[in-house]
Image (tube, rainbow, N blue to C red; front, top):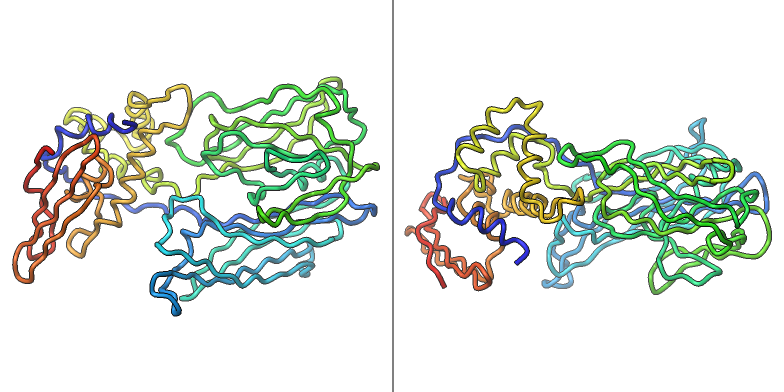
Length: 444
């Protein structure tokens, strides 16, 4: 089983008393809103055909009971997109009023998202772009950046960079609704960007992506760049400039149709991002014959990362279930400035795929801890990850079945059945004060 390692590490610690380590204040991750913008040259040198939109993880939205259906939850929101020129004048504005319906409350760890896009022709220039999503109770999610549409190779490459669906006909490509952002955990993506028309289709091109700034200190290593195989024939460069932008109705994706004429070439290449960590990257398109290089920024973003990645002392608090007394003491005595590296080294010994930066064992452990933090929180135990129910959930995952017996004025019981490879029954006693205490473990 994939997480038997966590089970083996934690099984003998089930009844160990929790260490006294209160979490410090945590830094909240930013909202999961992504602005979408792409620009392609037109027959006029002073304007561009643009795709403008947004994408937001639905786990960030506020859901309530649907008034017309007791089995559904609904989230209403308004998304406002604005592009202002350098003088502050609004040159583009669009308001999307939308809703999302689900039968169960969305998991914030899911990549499930809602998005909308618009097509418009804009004058070339520099704009400040903002996406403002508002909901009931005045909740706001804001995304901002600066974009430049122009005729220089750098501006055209930066504005046209996109990530396309892998299976496309030769006369068009459909862009994923990621904007300039690749979701962390993606495996192989198809990048599409423009190159100068003077670059012959027989030039040898190298596509390379280099890490410029990483987001989380819990991911470190030396593999900061990934390179695609060289592109050297006409099939790698499409000498077909933009014709129109249409919608792929089945996939709800904007598609770019290419028409035979002049203006610009597009290069398409697959990039393997399995070893890429969350951070800011720079895509380099290198022409080997002249060493001319186009540099285009993009991002790999981990949507809704575990909060524990922001604070090493709290990470240590939830790791107490799998650490020996000596390991815990040593990490606790480590200075704050060095504790992150020490925790990384400990988890490297548990990594099932040490050749990659993505440590599945560590991510799964902290994912469970993040889930337990709120799921098992009560008025008397506000941090569910540091409770006895949270401990079992972190070590063994979600139970197959839960049976609860609560009687007014009497201690209740809650039984967790693991009929999978764990094959155990955990019985918790619920005190009249609302605390859950582990009372017995039985083999099934």
